[in-house]
Length: 532
View 1 (tube, rainbow, N blue to C red):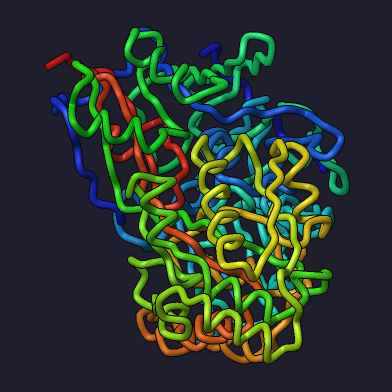
View 2: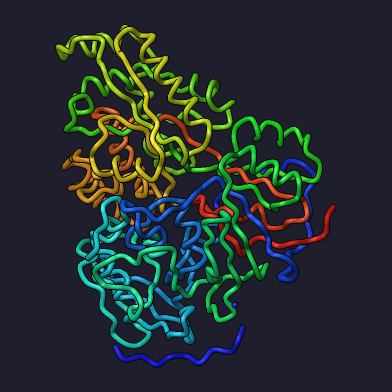
């Protein structure tokens, strides 16, 4: 594609917060040293994950947090509320009553970090690329309903959908729809390594794996709807939450992000650490057990139902998480209008006798032997304790003989999504604040887990019906039926719903806005004010 290269000058909602400690109300400043954000997340280039920040492959909250700050999308999740706001686009909307054609007009003057101009052909290229690569465990399922993307002019792009989808604007707000440079990225292969060429509010200056840090600078050429409160961000990667807390207390970092342990939450809530604030928000993170429904154990519906009948969520919440999370009885979390406690409605309180009857009626001999898999280093240090509790609950019933096995995330993720595990733990952060984000990615044919589970009523009737409804509150009946089906078939077994936590030194402002409804970190909200 012929393109003009821009000559650059030499320069770079939904959730109500509760603060503990003595915070600062001052506005942020763009001057001074970088704001340093700590995390226990780690990124590595491996054979299974050669491109951690490629929009065609990345599909987890940690990678999306970095991508959401460096890439640009046509629209974005707002600071509050649910309706997407304009970012790379100046105007977007459906052009037909059936919600099958979605048209966007790009802003003028959009520029990639390499100096190339952003135009509608790049948008067309970016979405088609995700669909063409179709990376296993990646986000291509979000665009399974896209029939054609058409750049009708330098700044006009039209999405033609196979079927109506009122949630399509939300999908365009995710990093899966990040606009990449068609002259830099391959149409059919991943961009390996940590390289990022985007037009977002920040540029990734350096990813230093040796010193466990990454640096970002404000992109002075960014054109979009974001107001930025700082010039530089540095991320530091820690091997443990305790090491990260020590760095926060010692002033080596300004913000403590994922993952804050339950015991740390309790300590910070009591304000025992001077000069540090804890921000707590309602969240939509969910944790669940996934089953290979064609596996030797996970493929037996009665086994899945017996586990649903036995597992005590209240015990998990208390013993493993010090009540910093809440029991969850549905695949759709509380806080979304369609939520229904379908698992509690069907199974009630944990009961060994009822679980035994389920297995006996199906002719399954006990104890049922299985290995319950979990990841050791992605969801926080409490995960091992959680799976120890699950193991004890199942084994104490006498109906199961369970072993647990922990695997590092770099190996765990491709194995889980590649169908190599029979029964395993997984977590989910929504792509966008709608019940569709807890149904479509799990149950459509090209689902991100690679699950073989299929239910024609969900995919052929209920989900399409909800996507025709622009008034999302009216989807409750259909999504309620989806939740009841899942409770009956148990392809997933929901365990708990989390809250969101950030801790920061009290001269850092904007912390209450720094996590969006998908738990993605928004660098631009953080500023440095006066200490209280």
